Image 1 (cartoon, rainbow, N blue to C red):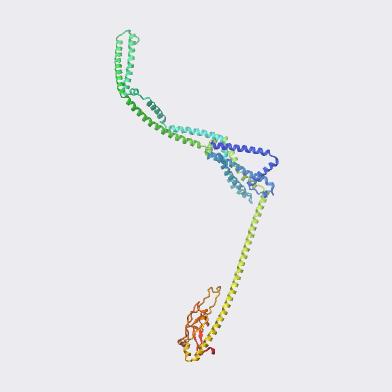
Image 2 (cartoon, rainbow, N blue to C red):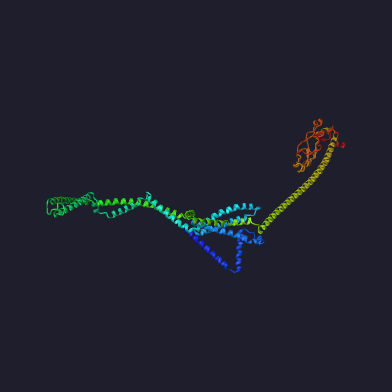
Length: 585
């Protein structure tokens, strides 16, 4: 077992020991303090269960059920903390403190998920619908239980799993050694090591005597001398035995057989002496160059030793890498999957262990599913007072929200209608004011036009009277002066209200500098007809046309009525002729 897992195991043991001490401490508390602690724990469990305490106060008979439901949720969260801490320590080999923090985070997540499953599981109109609603939540709870209970099961069989893992690791190491011995890269490694040792010894003990002894001729002569020496010794023994009569012919004394053996002995003695002389001579010859040969021999053996050491070092490094990789693999083969595999292998040979594993795994999974199962069982039973009050509260809240929404809608609609009515009233008032203002402006324009016409009439009457008086004084100039008659008409521009025509009033002004008597009138906003009326126009009964268009000045007789006989016209504007003097009109 890895060191983080061992620390986690010891930490869990300390946690359980602390829990036992806490229970003993609670038993020793006075009744009042124990009631306070119990109330605080009950409040925490009610919060975890998602219970409405205000409604629960109206149904005290359901207090125990809700507290038990919260306790079930806390139990699953506690098991999740332990499970995740063990898994993090075993799989990721984290420090026990980091594993504990990760376990706490996982426990909070499981707590929140179980709390949601409990709160969202509600009673339906029929028990079949309630059951169908609870099935998906139960399945989800079972999946969570399988995940959470697996590390706890491994923790329960931790001793058996560790022993099996040690056996498995030993078998893996032995198999690795066999593979290393059969590997072609390492089969010659022992022989190479021994050869390297021999070369080191030969280099250390190299001398001229070794060169002489290992010389081919010296070695051959030495071998031949040893053989002749052995033959000579046997021949000497044969001669002595023959003379004593203990072997050979069996006769005492130097007989023919003894002489033959002596001759053979003497021949071997001569050969021995010759070989000794040759060996001595050869050694003397070889000894002359022994130093150089010793130096060359040492150099050659050192080169062989260096090459052999390089080969051995390379093979040993490769083997060391293989061993390190195997050791790392064996050390890493202690995770969650390895432990599951070890437990499975143990179950194959130990049926009792398999049964215990199944029972424990099912028990832990059931504990993880306990909140949802507990809530589903409660919903399948008789409706409790708390549920009835909760449904009534929900219905009341829904109706209140609908009423508030309807009231808000009506208020908004009334406000919008009031704003619309106010806008319409403002528009009507504005329109009335604009019509009244337009009427006032139109009346003012009519008054101004009347005053202008009256002023024009007075001015023209006086002017014509003056001209006629002058003409009467000089009858010869009466007809001639008709050609120079100039009549000035007032310029009245009709005003149109912008709401009816959409156009701004246009104003035409008289061109200053044209010859007429009343220049001030023209400059004040009038249009003058200053072109003299010639006799040709008078003879045809017509006058030059006046301008037309939206900017044309307003002049009398806009209907273009043909003038009566005896009048000259300028685009339907009548000018009195000499026989129609204003006095006669």
